[in-house]
Amino acid sequence: MSPLKYSPSKEHPDWLSVPSIFEGVSLSKGVGMGYAFFHSANPSPDQTSVDLSLKQELSHEDEKTKLDQAFDALQKEINGLLLVNFHNSQSEPKKILEAYQLLVNDQGWKRRLFKEIDHGKSATQAVDRVLDTLKKQFSDDPFWQERLFDLDDISQRLLIYLKQEKYAQNTDPSIPIIVIAQNLGPAALLKYHQRNLKGVVLAETGRTSHSAIIARSLGIPVVGGIDAISSKIHSTDSILVNGDIGRVYIRPAENIIRALDKKKARHIPNGANSSPGSSTTLDGIQIELHLNANLSEDLRHLDDGIAQGVGLYRTEIPFMLSDGIPSVETQTRFYQQTLDLAGTKPVVFRTLDVGEGKRSILAQSNKTNKSPSKNWRGWRDIRLTLDRPMIMRQQLRALIRARCQSQHPEDPLYLMVPMIADLAEFMAVRHLVALETKREQKLGNPVPESIKVGAMIEVPALVYQLSSLVKVVDFLSIGSNDLFQFFYAIERENTDLSRRFDVLSPSFLLFIKSIQDQVSPYQIPLSMCGEMASHPLEAMAVLGLGLRRLSVTPGSLESVQAMIRSLNVQKFMPYLLSICQQTPSDFINRPFGLASSIRQKLGIFAMDHGIIV
Ligand code: PEP
Ligand code: MG
Image (cartoon, rainbow, N blue to C red; front, side, top):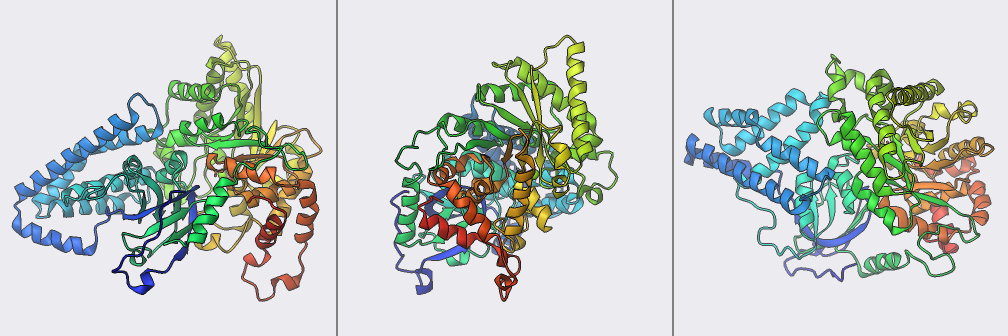
């Protein structure tokens, strides 16, 4: 942790000098500390009134010139970002910036803006108005939602130039900053990343937003769901963002800083188990640790020597960043590069998992859908790709070819199918895999020596079909993010409810145990790749239920490994089961849902037994 220290400003009123803590939602893990930096993209009402006076002073032509100049400045900024950051790279952030470049050159958008100026609006009002109109017109259209987000981001940056505000104005770029914003687009995030960005605090909570995804891959801690923070901070305040637990400390006390320093120092404990590759518990049980990947950037964490492979590759993320569905050739190239980056380590490719929050990919599919928003809920993932089998077949074709063209064509191809609710769906996917394999053979193309097809357990209904499923799958992985939301009937993005129910409740834990108990008699590897496995305390519980494979976000590899190495799992298992037995008295006068949480008891157990969580 940087030696940044809270030093209260003389002008602070008393209430602004005391440390305070805000609880939010972790959108990207890690811990960072810096000075508050307010992202000024969203115009305040005051700025609008300034705008009105400008309108009286400037002619239409002046406003048009201002707009042209702002476009030029924005264009230069994006070109500069591309040149400095992504020269010779094929990364996803680069693709986003390229999409922005196209938007800035979009003549249709410019025409609308100029038309607004012709109708008497100022340049800034025109930007706001066109954005509002497009939002109203298309907000229900899944295809447009991703584009509107990009347009929103780029419009806000245009407004900054129109108001002659610039990032980092009067600010030393070497000063560590925590950016505070309502929402932050990927372009702004990348821009701040060029500076000494240590963390981000957002009012919004979109875990699957482009920014959150990119922040995770860049290792920037982000906490969302924190409102009304600005009025409680002064720009000279230090802020600590703990993305591991979704907490933000304003003017953090010395002991908090010291505790987090200590936690970091303890990540690699000394002792017999301290070689980087070993994830063995104190009582000698070997745990398989893999990583979850969203971008090719995530694969570099394989070099740290902790993860044995990629337990979940979310293939929809590269899809989301491209316009429509990428061709088989593009997909093949991309998967092949991914496999080559991983070398001999296995990569489990999850077939397209599209749904709420990951919509742009559906552009093509929804063109034929008269009312996409009405039909959307529930029509996602495997349901959608089985209804549009060509999407699935093309992806399978690309994956088969990528494996054969990779540096290790003899290694198995691992495919994982999300959101299976019914055994027949899994069988349908297996059938498509067989069809694609045959097709390649007919064409005289090579096929992988072995294709392993697994299923994700994310829908509770599947848990009652396990006795049949185990006979047809090669491996299984619990997607606790979705499984939890369907188990408790809560939306996973809903911050209010996320505090009402806890994954560390006996009902959910025993449900996972029932999966483990049903699968363990068979030689089917069972892992957990949902976020639950990425938090040390939760991961400890998962091991206590008997699972021996975890796939975690790259930022959690070290902390989960540190927990594993400090845990005596055989001692812990009976304790865990004993506290899962509750009686009605445990629920009297306790908050709904959380009443049954055993989080506190697990935390105390960990503390008493020196387990690093
Ligand atoms: C899950 O649901 O737990 C999972 C890993 O998939 P995703 O978070 O991508 O929906
Ligand atoms: Mg899922």
